[in-house]
Image 1 (tube, rainbow, N blue to C red):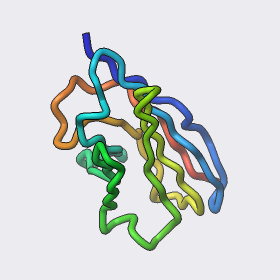
Image 2: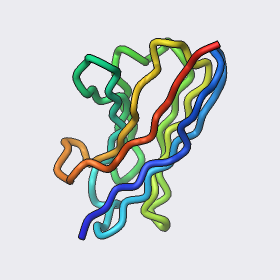
Image 3: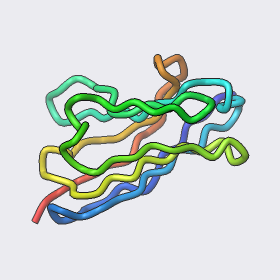
Length: 116
């Protein structure tokens, strides 16, 4: 059974940093492109960043160049990471991981709240 478990969210002040983790159990995640998605209150879920099995990355225009963001993966641990620096209040959302495009059941996500 496939399970996606996200962690690492929390409450941070503007300008702060967070590192999110996603453990994908039940699948060989190394063969799938993986993505981090987010859903802000009242908005649709959007893809934020993605990474292929061999490590090529891509970022949404909404985050590219606006704050330091980096997606990475450790295939030996079936884990995908999202490092975010310089967070802003508009980055407040529930963050999820899934394949890209999303094919698996969504996990519970991890809440990121950026507020002073």
